Amino acid sequence: MELFINLTINGLATGMLIFLLAAGLTLIFGLMSVLNFAHGGLFAWGAYAGVWLYLLTNSFIAGIIGAIFMGIILGFITEKWIIQPVYGNHVQQILITLGFMIVLSEFLKVIWGPNQIAVTPPAYLTGSWEIGNILIIKYRAFIIVVGFLMYALIYYMLKHTKIGLIVRAGVINKEMVQSLGINIKRIFLYVFMAGAAMAALSGMLIAPYAGVIHGNMGMEYAILAFIVVVIGGMGNITGSILAATLVGLIGSFMAYYVPELSLAVNMLIMAVVLLVRPQGLFALKG
Image 1 (cartoon, rainbow, N blue to C red):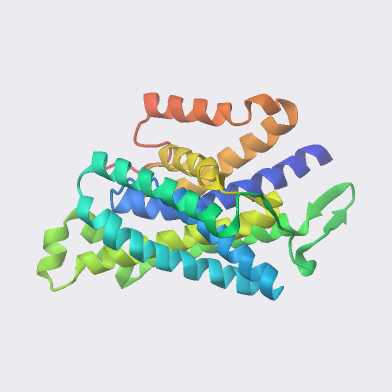
Image 2: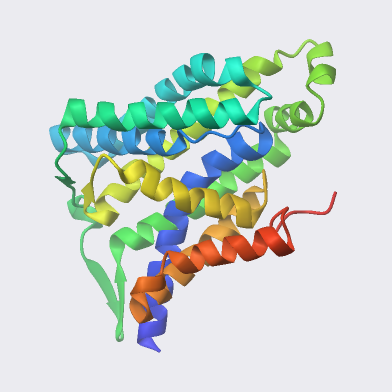
């Protein structure tokens, strides 16, 4: 029983990390219909910038702020000069963002070198609580709390604020929103920057969890994010957190019992979902 609970906590923590990355992709991919393969690059840059600031100042909070700031800047650059010229053309979006992803990964190695960088959690998040025979690692509990808080924040903004209403209306009919005097291009730019900031934040948070960061981490984790978006349903933030939790739990249990199949099983689930319910497991009707 203790093993089951420990694996469940590990799976939830991994799921929340994937959700933070996938949530940004859900906003960009699902709401704006932009196939942003550079999302993993934004994630990796957030990790490197945040970790660099964290190690420099010995402040984990400063690292988080630095990662978010880096995500906002890169989000602005990506949307303004990479995405805007190819809005509405998915093939061009795939090619240009995939190329940008490679450029971002290579520049990481130029600035910080090709070697891995070791990262540990701050002292106040190191260690664990022991309840009976159950061991709860503090940093994993922290990740789970952050993940649920971010979900609540995004859900509230999309469903209960004016900006959320404008975004949802703009997705359905850009021309109608534009005719009301609202600059929908600027709104989409802000949405993209928010999605990029979330990718960068997840990169910073996953660094102490994984223990090291490296130049190819963007592609590695971006695959999981795309799997979550496909399983959860395009633009469905609730679907994303449910799918991320599912992927995290399956990954945790498979990594313990059948480690060779821990990634393959997620691919298999995605393939089955695409065949049976291509709109996503948790997509709403209509």
